[in-house]
Length: 379
Image 1 (spheres, rainbow, N blue to C red):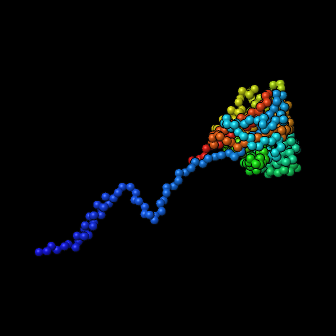
Image 2: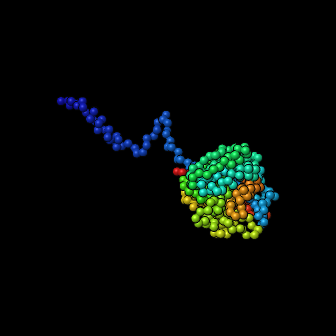
Image 3: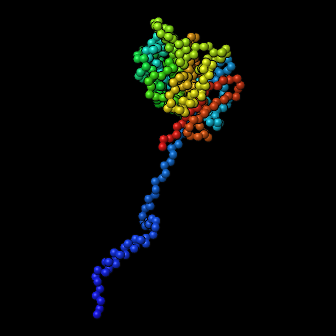
C-alpha cells in the first residue's frame, strides 16, 4: 500500500523552520545593500569659542609732579595680555572722536546742587565732547529717563543739561549704568583698520545705588568687552546738606565714596591715592573681584571701582574741588591720553585677562584698564 502524503506537511515544516532561521541570524547590524544610502550619526556638537577682535586700552601717563606726559611714541609702550606680549595695532594720543553718554543723578537728595549742575552743559560740550564728538544724556532717580539721544549739536546738549530737574528720592545708579553701556555698545565698533570712536560713560552722581536690578560686576563686564571707559564726578551729599536749609540732622564729615583730605605734596589726588591713604583699599583688586564675581553685589566705592576697572578716573567734589573743576580735569585727560589697541594673541579664550602696560622711561606713573573678562559659553 502506498502512503498517502499529508497536504498540510509543507506548511507545518515552514512554520517550524522560521524560528530556527531567526535563532541562527548573525549578530550585529546587517550590511547595507550596495544601492542603499548610509545614514551617518549626527556630528558631535562643537564647543563655541569666544574671541575678542580688538581690545582698546586708554592709557594715562604722568610724571613725578603729576603732570601728563605727551611726548611718548608707540615704541615706548609694552603691553601684555595674561603675561603674553601683544603687538600694538593702533596708537593715538587724544585725537579720536568721542561717543559719550552722560548720566546725571536727578534724585531729590541732590536738589540743592542742581543749579550748579545745570551750568555744566558748556563745559561738557567744550572740554569733553569737543568739536568731533557726540553725546547722549540720561537722568536717573527711581527711574531711568532718556533725556537726549546721541547728537553733535552743542546747543542741544547744553539746553538739555540746563533743563535738568530733580524728582524722586531713589537712585538706580547700576540700572542707569547698564542703560548707558547698552547705548554706547551701539556706536561704531573699533577694528584694526578703523579705530572708530572712543566710548566713554560719564557719571555725575553720588556713590550709592538704591533699588537697581543690575549688578555692578555684570555692568563692568559688558563695559570692558565693549571698550567703554568710565569716568565719574562724585557728588557730595554733605555739600548738598550744607547748601540746603538747616535741619536738625547729623551730617557725616565724609560720606561714602567722598574723601575730603588733601593728597600728599607733589601727588595728584586720584581715587587710588585718596582711598588707599584713608582706607588701605586696593581698588584694582576690588575691581577684578567685582568682575569675576559678577552676580555678587558691591555696596561701597561703586564709582571708584567702575573707574578703576575700565581705566577711567573718579573725582570727588568736596572742599577744594567743584563740579566744574572736576569736569574740566576729566576733559583735559580724555584729550591728552594715549589710546592703544591690540588683538589678543596667544592667550586663553575665556576667563579673566589681565592687561599690563609699561613704558621704557623711568619715574612715570601709568594708568590703564586692569583687564577684561570673557565668560565661557553656556552649555
